[in-house]
Image (cartoon, rainbow, N blue to C red; front, side):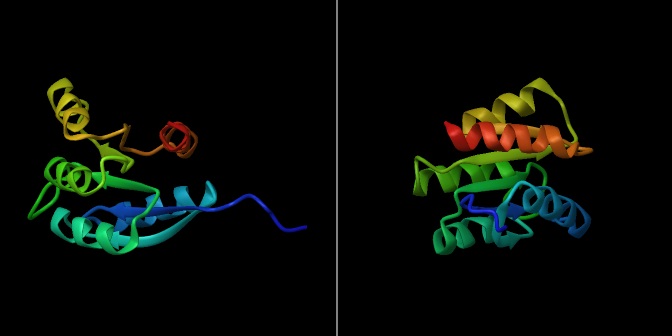
Length: 126
């Protein structure tokens, strides 16, 4: 029997190949189709324009444009964009900056699959 549940599309943005692979595994387990991957914020904005993923999972700290700036730029393109930030830093100021930039949620490294998917699913239902 095949799963008739519709797959959601996602973009992964992280400068670390290992982190992208972990996010790929988490999102695939949650029935998301990865339509794009970026290694920095500049690339993320360009890929967002082309692929319009239903959710973007983006690292905060990256070269070129960081996740905060890239999130602002994506939200400027599409006020309904859903961006979930991911970070190993749990600093309140950073979290506030992410939400002020337009992030819909945040997950923390090291990733726990169930918790990450819970945040992403919640964001998708908003």
